[in-house]
Length: 71
Image (cartoon, rainbow, N blue to C red; front, side, top):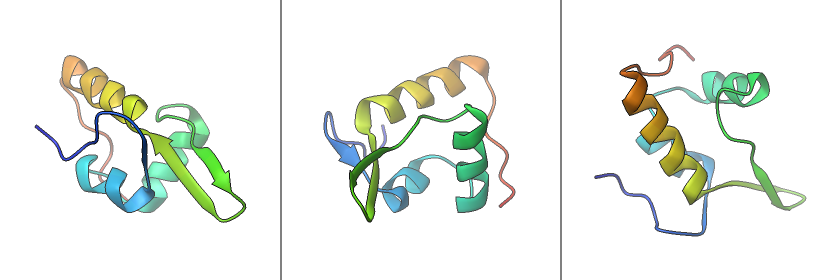
């Protein structure tokens, strides 16, 4: 399927390798509530729960749509 761990956290480059959007579009989607909320692991380390990314992929697949590729 995708290179997503069963559990744990994914940094932004990992997320963008499986979700076809650019960095700017990803952050706009997070702000708008279309994409999962990140977890701050430290002051300079932001990540997403692997489970949330899996759920997003499932939702997008069920909708039969892809996120905006602009960005």
